[in-house]
Image (cartoon, rainbow, N blue to C red; front, side):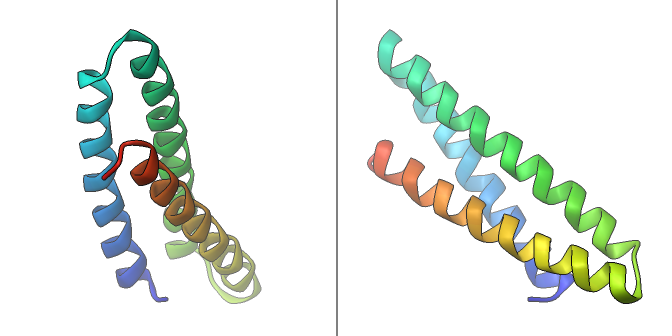
Amino acid sequence: MNNKQITARLNELNAEIDRYKAKARQLGIDAQTEGRSVVDNLVEQRDALARKLDEYSKSSGAAMERIGAGLQESLEALNRSVKDAARMFKD
């Protein structure tokens, strides 16, 4: 994936995370705590991916390749986490 594709996917994931935040607020107390924990984890992963994307866009050469591999792994991990959240929130 290139920088624009990753940015576009990150924007899509942001919208999904926002949906889950709203759903977590609608849950009962116990489920809300668990839901908030899941959303917090998604936000942390999203923020880490955004930092790597920024670092990637500022790099070149071997550093770009190294960061690019980590960027792809982070994107895949966030995709998996969002899918897990979708199951939890029955989305």
